Length: 233
Image (cartoon, rainbow, N blue to C red; front, side):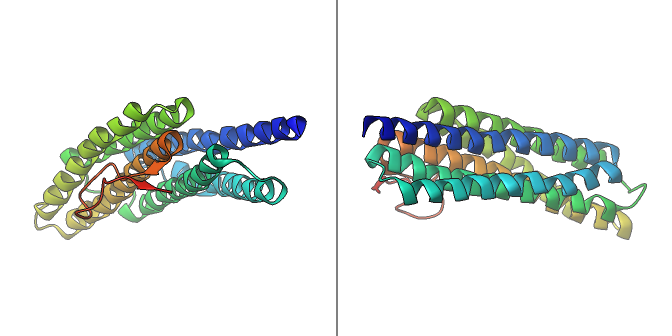
C-alpha cells in the first residue's frame, strides 16, 4: 500500500510539472505575439497560430492523465484538492493559448503598413508584457503554494484593466480617418485578449489558495456581493 501511495504521489507531481510547464509555453507564445505586434510581422503571427497545437496537446495530456489517475487510485482529501486544481489550471493554460492565437490572427487584418497611433500601440504592448508577468507569477505562486504571492496578482491585474480602459478611450478618439479607426478597433480586441490572459492568471492564483486552504474564494469582489467569501469544497 505504501509503495502504491508513493507511485501515486510521483504521478501527481509529474502531472503538476506538466501543467505548470504549459505556462512556460504560454510565455513563449506571448513573447512571439508581442514581437509580432511591435514589428507587424505576419509570418511570426502565423508561427503563433501553428504552435497552438503544442498547448492543445499539453491540455489533452494533463487532462487525460488526471482522469486516468483518478480511475486507478483513490486520492485522499489533500491530493483530491490538487487534482481538482490542476484540472482548472490546465484549462486556463489552454485558454491563454487561445487568446494568443486570437491576437495573432488580428495582425494580418491591420494591413501591411497600418496607420499606427503610437500611444495606443505602446499601451497594447505594455498590456502584453504585463500579462506575461502575471503568467510567470501565477506559475511561481502555485508551484510554491504561496498564497500572498497569488493574491498580489490582483494588483497586477488592476494595471492591465486600467490600460484596457485607456486603449478603448483612445480608440474612440482615434479621429475621422476610416483606416485609422479600423486599426484602433482591432487594437481594442488585442487589448481584450491580453486582459483575459490576466484574468486567467488570477484564476490560477485562486486555485493556489484552494490547494493550500481547502476553501475556494474569488480574489475580486466585483462580480457579486458574496464574491470573495470563502466556500468549502
